[in-house]
Amino acid sequence: MALKIYRVSVDPESWRMLPTDESFWKRINLFRLASMRSEWGDPTFYVKNPVIDKRMDFVGLSVGSLVFWDNVYDSDLGEMIESCGEVLSGKAELNPQPDETLHVFNCTACYNCFDRDKGKARWTPDGTMAIQVEKYAFHPDRIGDGNLFKIPETHRVHIYTMTGQEEPESEFYGLYHSLGFTGLKFEEVWSDATE
Image (tube, rainbow, N blue to C red; front, side, top):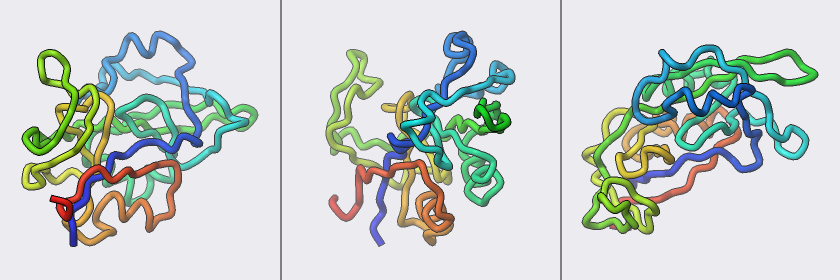
């Protein structure tokens, strides 16, 4: 079975959530591989465009994060997500329905597994961050136990998952699909079959 790595993002047709307090973006050091719990507070979010976009199991908030409802959090997938970082709760204003709890995943699993010799990217002047990855390449043996992870070069914007190491239901990609959840897109960015 081939190892595959996917970039995980929110479906563009899913709801986008925005904080009701604009200072939220300034007071929290968002999704930078560190805990946000002490700064998190009790935020409230609203749906940016509830008429055009669709409510799905995963909804958008910020790049580098995943946001989901209680049905995901209470499932085996929620347990898997929580093992890869921290899950913070907030309230969603869903007029005219009552407010609901939503859960924000802050991925803190980060593995130094990008193969700079085989990959191709445009880099920041200091060479630490990829402005754009043109070709992905990985050292799969450097990827830890987390089913969801980041890499140092793109940690501010992308979350990844891997398949082909375990049974499908033991991996994020397989479990997400077998449970029938909605709201995520998986873009295959690398496979060891193409090496």
